[in-house]
Amino acid sequence: GLLVAIIKQPNTNLISLSADMDKKVEELKKILPSGVTIKPYYKQADFVHDSVRSVTDSLWIGLVLAIIVAIIFLRSLKASATILITIPVTICLSLIAIYAVGYTLNIMTLGAIAAAIGLIIDDAIVVVEQIHRSHEEHPSEPSTTVVQKAIHYLLPAMIGSSLSTIVIFIPFEMMSGVAGEYFKIMTNTMIITLVCSFFVTWICLPVIYLLLTREKPDTAKTVKAEEKPHEVKRQKWVGYFIHKPYVSFIIVAALGISIWLVLPQLETGFLPEMDEGSIVLDYTSPPGTSLEETDRMLRQVEKIIDKVPEVEAYSRRTGTQMGFFITEPNNGDYLIQLKKERDRSSDEVIADIRKQVESTQPALQVDFGQVIGDMLGDLMESVQPIEIKIYGDNITKLHELSEQVGGIIEKVEGAADVFNGIVISGPSVSIIPNNLALAQYGLTPQALQTQVQLGLQGTEVGTILEKQQLSVIRIVYPGTSAQSVEGIKQLQVFLPSGRLMPITQLATIQVNAGDAEIQRENLQSMGVVTGRLENRDLGSTMKEIQQQVSSEVVLPQGYHIEYGGAYAEQQQSF
Image 1 (cartoon, rainbow, N blue to C red):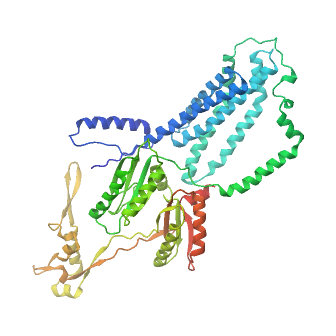
Image 2 (cartoon, rainbow, N blue to C red):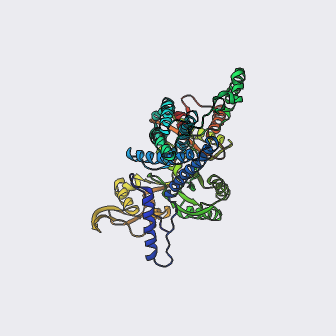
């Protein structure tokens, strides 16, 4: 099959682009020959659609709850109607302001609007309740006068309440890194929404209320002071705490102690866990594995994926992965799209596939994640939530420590896809010239190298213009015999006398085992052990890992350990 990945431009509307691509796909289906089909395997627009639907659901649920609260406590259908109109007006004004500052509708902005809906409802209910209360206190005065008094009375409190809420988000503006960029978008959207809510409740809500309450004042009704429902003496439970303040102190102290006891038990993480409905399965076969053998193992993996009922579609890439880095032939990834209607979450499906792959294909090193999380990881220093960096000078010792730390992490509950960070490149072939034999036949090492290069990969001799682009002209020995070790041993070398001689009589062909990749940071060698989480939070998992590593690993002088990945970003953000 042919896999086509479409990447949008930074300022392109994802929803519109996705809709246009769907139309193009439908047009292509009509002209394709029989037996050829097009099947989408991942659309990020679906996740955005779900986010929009979540905001819409939150809006409607908030409106219904606001109306219920207003009817029960204010006993007024007109007050409920005022709230019903005010909330959409606030959201529309917020969307206009978001567009004006150059933001787009994305996961962070939509999430911020959804989170602010409760505060919008609260502002509207407070103002409507105060107007309703003022009507009870002054039933003979015109509605315009009552509304003016209510707004004048509430204005200082409204300003203080809005500012105190907005000020909370200011420290998030100082966050750095990828997390800081995302939080800035979210907090700025929250601030914009709260400012819009203040102006709507201060200016628009009174007008809406007056338009819906055009009744004449009833001068016959006078509410006696002792019948006012808001008086403290009618609230017996309030009077109880006023007359016995020590009870309030005991309750507050008990709550403080409870927080002190519960806080260490709370689960902590970096970013919220999202069920995107898609899975990224990165895999690595043993170093030096051919494409054919890797493909054979992966076909067994595909049988496992096919049997998972929640899987809707999947794609596989071998020799390339997500991101813009060089990938070796034994590496690749699967992108698995799950059905929208399913009984298990993405994490549960991942755990199921992981268990089956590890039991049937133990030679494969696998790493599971989700698409957006994987992309965020590419933007940060590490994709993995668990990352332990070991710094030192001796590569062999670093490998020993990495293997030891990796073994420790594998035993920690909640750790999965543990990798000791030792990446072995494929085996290499060395051609070592026999200088004595070369001198005997009148060849130089440089002449031998030129002929070997000609036989293995060819020599560029020029270019040719073909289909409006230059193609390289390369001279190479005929056939593909030199693409294997045995083929190299049969390579014939031209002598100055014109004779042909096997290369084995002029050089030694040596097959070398793969060498480990050397990783450095700030010009210092290091080993990196990584892992993911399974059914456990980041904070408690890393706490246990740190305890185990510090108690079991003895570092030589000049070596030290640092904890990176999502944990480091979490600590910096906190």
